[in-house]
Figure 1 (cartoon, rainbow, N blue to C red):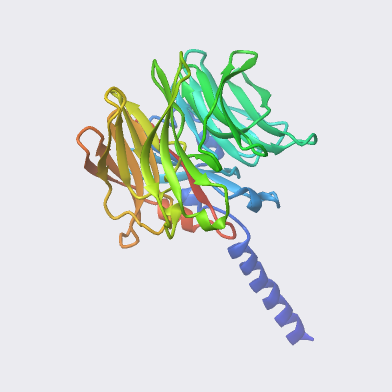
Figure 2: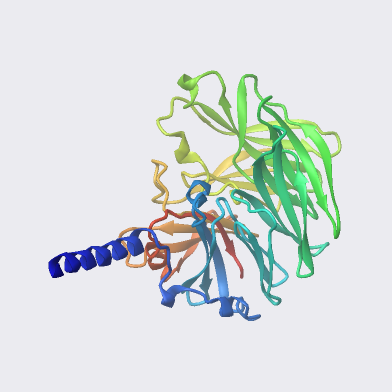
Length: 401
């Protein structure tokens, strides 16, 4: 009887260890930002960057999905704040505050700490941002099909005084910000039609305005490869065109810069790259389509997943390959690589398995087309390795200073 009891206790103990190891997600206490610390008004004062990681939506069916806001301080040290999951989640920065979003909660972190519960849980993010003139943060979600067979995308917008929720009755393929307006490429999935639309939130309401239907090559589908950018005269977005006529052509694609004149609505196309009979098309997909393109001094920059950075002169309409990052994998395998533009700077989160601290940030000058420095990240690999039982992926990256 004692042997049976002993082996039963051993079995329970081992089972408990297995459960803790494989199914209980946790972060080491030494690597985590406590709830009290996240509310500190000075929490951002020494923070240089923030990354967003999350489980995928299918891993959240048990309600146990997680996301991490990983802050990197001025010394290059990483620590993480744990939240609920949100696939394709992102962060927004503005007015010395950062907006953190998960499945069912919005948090404003920085000068003023506020948190707001969502009435409806969300599982797939699209974009977060800050509209400076209106002092409004916003977060977009591709929420899913509704009971009438249509598609709903939800938007929440507001500030420390509160957030409003509205519905956008379209699937959003990609989006961006033009001054204080959100520009979205929406898709009618069944008809394979694409429309550019303007979304304008204000303090208490939101308006949706159609801009134009996007022309696409015959028998093809389009997918977003960049955010939507804008200057005074044009909207710009990088779209990938792939044939719709069968699996045999799935390895063919064209990466195209679309330009739409704001006044005349004329559409122009400029080919960035062409792929034919490629073994692995996913290898060239950007590290993050939300951040893959940038306008600076009349030049549009676009970085793909091969580390190639293209430059389009908006005045001369000349397209060139500006430079190529070194040691970027060509097989499409990713290790949480991310990128972020600011003015003349491109920052890229990189991974090197040979290094003790496996993650670092490469800093490039866009105009010079060369790397300026490597910025060390200490502790990120330990944070990611501490997550057990779920697979998390990087979805956003922002330099805060």
